[in-house]
Length: 416
Length: 218
Image (cartoon, rainbow over the protein chains, first blue to last red):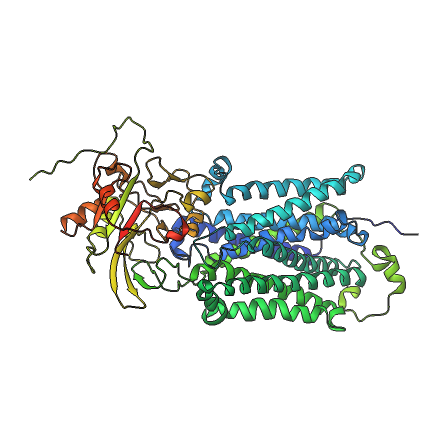
């Protein structure tokens, strides 16, 4: 007979737990101090200029927002596609989705020229603006996932969690479409203007969100000494592999589409061939370390079964994702606007030249602060509410797999 | 000598209407290379004092030098907000701070601009600047503030009183006369006559934004 899954809060009394809370709170505090510094002095203290108007805070913010949508994957697979083994994982998935979105939005708001006018953004709407749509998509996402979590966690209401999961699934696809369209609808900039942006962002969300989920899951179970089975990890890492491959596919199609149009050869040459840091980040960061290496590791017959390597793959996917965001957001602005085709342009306003950008320390601190906020929310939430099953061992999650499983080499997680 | 022109301005208590479409014609063949009077006049008129940081200092109008890569022909022209009929900045602005007046002047409402800079991402002409540090001694007619986006206003405060933008006056005073400002909808205006008589073009006409600023000899 299948045993019941029990959810339990983390005890959260160990020095390790409080050390983690302290570390994350410190990074968050530094991030807030950095935001205050930028706010009181103005953005001239950052690396951003009138040419590169969105810098590294946007890289972190958009990455987290995209990942937030993807972190809900696991819950969607359980609720929408009815995959039973994913069901015990769904609560953490919802929690992570909320936490990552809050972290990303915090960065975004604190990087505004006038963060004190948040209320203006919530009361004045231009409904033609994709940003304005996103305000509804983001707040709606938070509300829907919160309700979805409640339905999952309240036994009397759990029957309604499936339709809620469906609504959340559709909403998160819409949300990421909105995020991708922020760039896809920018006709002025050659690096952006493409309908492929929205689907590419959706598949990026699947990949980044699941990579973060995997790392958080492995860390939570290892550090709390709870058992985590190999079968469920194998499912998740195989799924991650599919998503990583799909991101590479979309990136390839995106660049091939641009290369087909001769007018876009300039920007393609810039990103793919002679764009300096952007070319390096594209090939080494995004494609090699963020795509091909994790793909090889995840599907490697022996390494792909070892937790350390799965964890490393997930970490590489995250770093590759940040590199990809950097190339898209900052590389796209670094390439000069083509105001006068066929003419060499120069001016005091940096027309016709590749725009330079060096991230400043406060910007990086703000970005990391948002990451810390997201993780802090998760760490505190799993202590006060029942997000994590006591055990995710194979016998509980996948009895059939456990019965037929062959011994595989595992890392230290089981012993923790 | 006093020059008296027929005022095209409305009364102060009268709302702007789409009967007027303010526009500017720039004759690049008259625009002198190395001449910067329009930029200086704009800076003085609107109180744009830089901090010596060209990458973050505001520029509402700039002189752009072009060199044809095929022929080597060099020309110079002023670039400013093109006051599009379909402004991408207005489309993307989440709060509606970027807006187009009925008479075609594209402005930023500094009271509701949150400084997201999405309009700067969307503007094909790189016409907007972000105020990246604190300002003082702003001109009362040209509200500017830290953390908000700004751009050429066509000197709306002058236009509303029947005057021309400062850059246009300065160009005329420098005897170049490369800039003509007026009501595109009024067939008797100088600009409408010139545009009807001579070929002129927009910058990036492929974008279909129907800009209020037109160039001759581009």
